Amino acid sequence: MKILILHQFVNHNTLVNTLCKKLNATELKVDSFNISTWEYVSSGCDLPFFLRVLKLLLFDYRLKLLVVQKAPFLLNGMLRKYDIVDIHFFGTFYYNTIDLLKKLGGKVKITIWGSDFYRASDIIKEKQRDYYKKIDCIQIGTDAMKDDFVAYYKDFDDKIQLAHFGITQFDLIDKIAGAENIEDIKFKLKLPIDKRVVTCGYNGSAGQQHLAILDAVLKLDNALKEEIFLLLPMTYGVTEEILDKVRDQLNVSGIEYLILTEDLTSEDVSRLRLATDIAINIQITDAFSASIQEHLYAQNIVIVGEWLPYNKLEENGVYYFKSSLDNLTLHIEEAITNYAVIKENSLVNKEKMHQLSSWDVVTRDWVNLYSSLV
Image 1 (cartoon, one colour):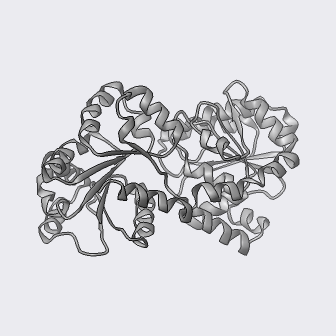
Image 2 (cartoon, one colour):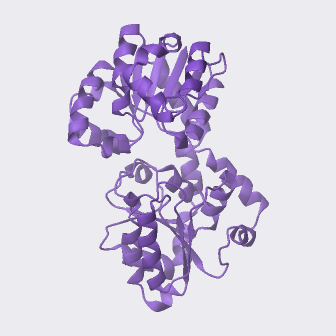
C-alpha cells in the first residue's frame, strides 16, 4: 500500500517526517509532500523531473502554493502513484486537489490537526462540508475533538476514525535526564536553581493568552512572587506588538523572567521541559498539544484551561489541574505552596503519557486506520 501525506507548514515537517519514518518501518510505504515548499520526502523515488524544474522556477513559496491551489493537475504524475492521499491540516488551498484526486480514483483522507477546525470561520466550515462529503475518511486525534466536530457537522460520524501523533520528544527527554542533572540543565538555559520555574505557554501567538497568565501571576502575594521565575517560550508565532505588551507587563510585575525568541534545538526543548516546575497552558483552543504532553511526561505540575479538550488525559488517569481564568491565580498559588505534595502526585504521569502517546504505542493505530481504507 502506497500513501502520500500532503501538508503545508514548515513547522509540521519534523512531525510529519517522523510519522512517515515510523510507518515505513511497518508494512506500509509512506511519502510526504509539502505543498508550500515542494519538499518531497520519498523512500522510493525523487520528485519527477518536470516538477523539479518547476520548483526551481517558482522560487517563492506563495507561487508553489498557488500552483497547488489553482493548477493541481500539474501534480498528476506524482499523485496517481498512491493508493491513499492523506491531507493534513485542512485548508482552502486543498479544494481543487481533492476534486482532482477523486477524478484519479484514489482514496482521500483528511487529518484534522485542531485549529484547522476550531479556528475556521462558519463560512469556511460550511464550504468544507462539501469536501468532507467527497472524501473517504476524516481522522481526528481525540474523542473530545470528535464530539465537537460531530456537534457541528452531525452527518460525518461514519467517516471519522481516531488516531493521534506520537511524541518523539519523550525519548530525548529520557536521554537528557539520564545524562544531565537539573542544575546543569538550568545553567544551560540560564535559569535560576533556587526558584520555581513557571513556564507560560509554548509559543508566541496571541492565542496563548500570555497577558491573562501574567494578570493571574500579578495577583499573587509578594512572598510567592519571590519564589518563582517566569519562562516564556515565544520562539514562533510571535509579533513585535505581542512581545512589547508581554515585556511591558513583565517589567511592572517585579518577577524575574526570561523570554525565549530564538529557535531551540530539540535537546534544549527537552531541557526546557525538565527545567520546568509548573507549566501553564490556557490558550484559546487546542487539540491535545504535544508540548503539554511533554510537560506531563517530564512530571511537571501542569495547569490547563478547563475549556480545552483534554478529556483523554482524565480517562487515562493523568494528574493535572483544570482552571478557569477566574481561578487561575488560586491554582498557581496552590501549585507553589503545596509543591512537594502535588509534584509527588504528578510522578505517575510519565508512564501514563508513555502508554498514551509514545510512538511505539500509537503507530499501530495509524497502520490499522490506513489498512481499513483499501
